[in-house]
Length: 139
Image 1 (cartoon, one colour):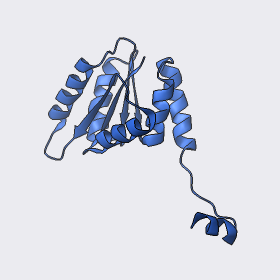
Image 2 (cartoon, rainbow, N blue to C red; image 1 turned 180 degrees about the vertical axis):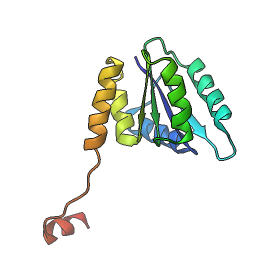
Image 3 (cartoon, one colour; image 1 turned 120 degrees about the horizontal axis):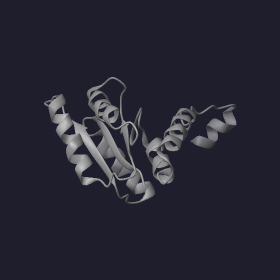
Image 4 (cartoon, rainbow, N blue to C red; image 1 turned 135 degrees about the horizontal axis):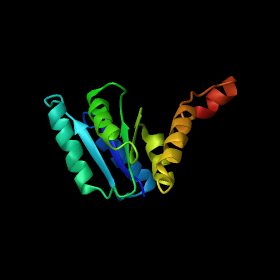
């Protein structure tokens, strides 16, 4: 089973896991890393190493981070680059992607990454109201 590290600026990752747990149930082999404003890249690296040491990463590790180019991404990408055969990184983590990752984490890492890229893009939608009747139904 793929180990998952959810990482973000501030406590977003912690909140995501809490929400996903409410919906999907408690998950094993998942860690969060919260990068705080008072911290630097070395602090973040230490947090990632601590998270990795607590996970069973014998299969592989998927990093789900909030923002491309941010510190959580930059530090995680260095770790993933050293273990490219066992690790992957996806940015833009949100609740639907996290829940989806939980449902397919028993698959090979490359298939999980491809699936999450597709489902993440299709998961962004807007509500289209075609008539006043549909608007009234929402109230």
